[in-house]
Structures are given as structure tokens and as C-alpha cells.
Image (cartoon, rainbow, N blue to C red; front, side, top):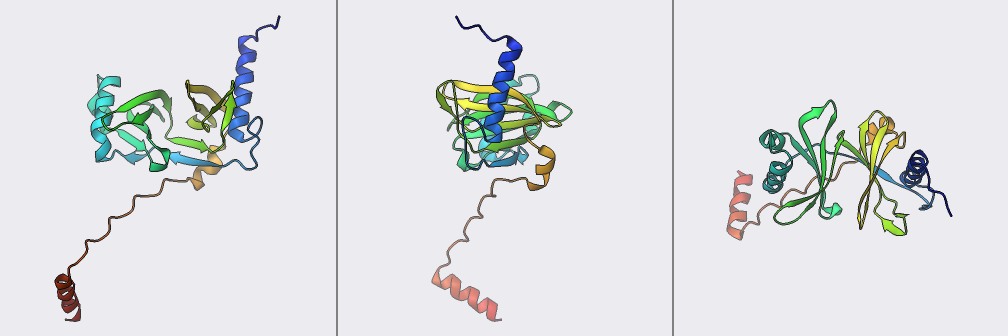
Length: 203
């Protein structure tokens, strides 16, 4: 009969397995593993404000107004319906309430809550844990060279602490931000309006 691993041994095994996934070696064996740094520092957009307000009324009932006022987001269309929310109210030094949620038309469904800094390292390698494919790992900075690794699986999120798995200091100068939204196209002019503009330019 196989012996069960002790708790410290199990933790070391889990951390080494996830560290291999984060750094791009081990079971994933990619040719090149890429990562991008994202900052949760964008102002709360108007089209998300109502949904964020309803969410924070539930998770921060005592100070939801201050929480909404101090909210920053990271969200991009390429992430599908995922939104990262940082509440810069009631923080502990650089560590603030950080939420991972799924957007719907009416609400934000909360999936993960943690204390973290404002920087996330997003990796591009899919991994297999316990027989199922998992999403690429996200490493949320928690302080110094430490982070919290979050890997989404069909059954929920897999979390573990991580030390020296990402060189935050070297990457600070090469932060990759989501592209800004495109400016709306100028309105089309009628022929009469175009002629009038042309006359004004010739004066």
C-alpha cells in the first residue's frame, strides 16, 4: 500500500510542479514560453460601474462606497469575459483586495478573492494537472519576489504561493499593457457639408 505524502512533502511537490508550469518546463515542455506583465490600474469604466457596485455591496458591505471609489480594473476583449478588480481602499501597504470575476450582461460573478499587489504576470503555457488540461497560470505579485499562482481548471481555481518564480524587478521596465481602445471614426460629411468645409479652408 502506498504511503501518503506528509503535508510539507505534498506542498513541496505541488509548488515544484506549478513552478515548472510557470517557468515553462516540466510536463508542459513548450519550445518557448512567453509572459506579459499586466497592471490592475485602469480607472473603472462607466459600462462596468453598476456591476462593480453591486458586487462590492456584497463583498464590502461596510465600506462599499469607498471601495467603488477606489476601484481599478484590468480588462481586455482578448480575455473573453474575465475581469480583474483591485480595490484600493482598506489596503495593507501595497496589498489590496483583488478580485477575479466573470462578466455577464447583468453582473460580475466572483470567482476568486485575494490580497495582492497591482501587477500580474500572465503566462501562455497550458498545463495538465491531475489528468485535465488547465488554463495558463497567472502570477499575482504579493510582495518582493513572491507571488500567488492562480490556475483555472474546470473544477475551480488551483492556488499556491510562489517565491522567486518571476523576476518582477527586471520586468518593471517592460510592462506590456492591453492596447488602448480605438478612437471613434469621425462622422461622415454630406456633400454640402464637405463643400462648406472646403470653402472655409480656402479662405
